[in-house]
Length: 227
Image 1: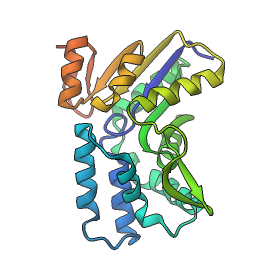
Image 2: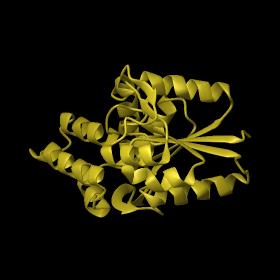
Image 3: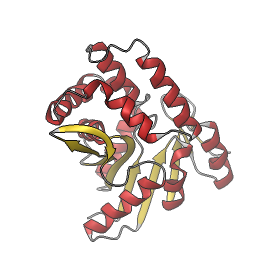
Image 4: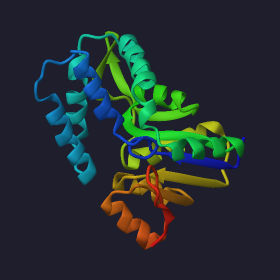
């Protein structure tokens, strides 16, 4: 196994959008929700996430509200269809290049996202990444319910789940690199040996300047800089 572990956030890092917001629009387009304010509520939750104040249980209940009558296996199939049809145009070309370079160097790559696991895993597969973690949900009578199954991959939970996964491999990586856009991932930034921030939010940019982390401007012509 490789000595280098490359860890990626997903939303606004590998893709130029929030996969959960795209998923919610997808559900609306499929007429799986009749709530006329569904996307307005989504935007409000996304503002909370960006501010680091998201109420996770409330958000999970909102996100699953259109799926209350669907079996988990049907949700998984719909999520796979979504990953294949909707996500590809949003993938940064620089992300594709970076993933290809890491694969060429035989680095171990893992995506750790605060989005729901049933979305993260098919998106990772579409990107050619075998290892992926998202918020796992409990099931009841074969259907997803808005309760995390284990520690959610959110803020410090990302570090917890990643270290748990590394431990399961019985392998010590010599170097852990991390790519993210969000201040919510600061615990992962401090866990990693090296950090690259991708189109960072203002709060993360301030930390990047403080700690001299390289700032990647993907999807632009600005390239890489460190203030």
